[in-house]
Length: 182
Image 1: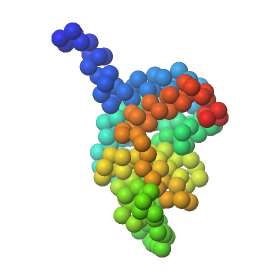
Image 2: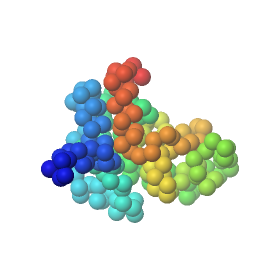
Image 3: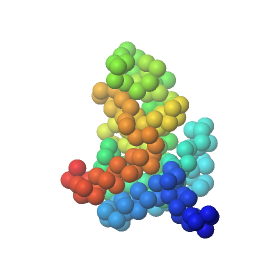
Image 4: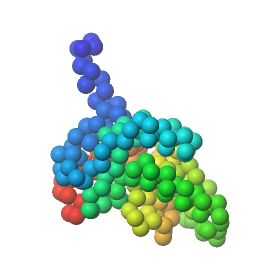
């Protein structure tokens, strides 16, 4: 105990503590087979090396809890991607952008995420995918989250961190039930 506070009290309000609290709530509502096994430290180290960045503490803690969400139904934007899927999707989008596949795309600057006129910005890390070309991405320049829709462009989401996304998802599960009910 530290000055009347337990270790749990100290970590509860931190991003990592919030991630773990949200996962506790999510795990209570989803079937066990919907949640992937934890990622390993080496998997996340390899992902960071391949992307050339350090993942935020709360994102890393989340993948150390569950490396993916694999259920039949997507939840709140799609499925949480495994480290391998994140890297595959990132490479596809950055290669297509580099090859000029999106030349001529004009984004509405009033509603778009700050993509600097690109369809897909290399600073975006696709953490959630829907197998239809849409992603929720972490903008590594700002820490904001981007809804990247392959048909309509990109927009910022209201989550200030990954813990906020998981808390929102836990709330949906608690109030609306399984993803097929969303």
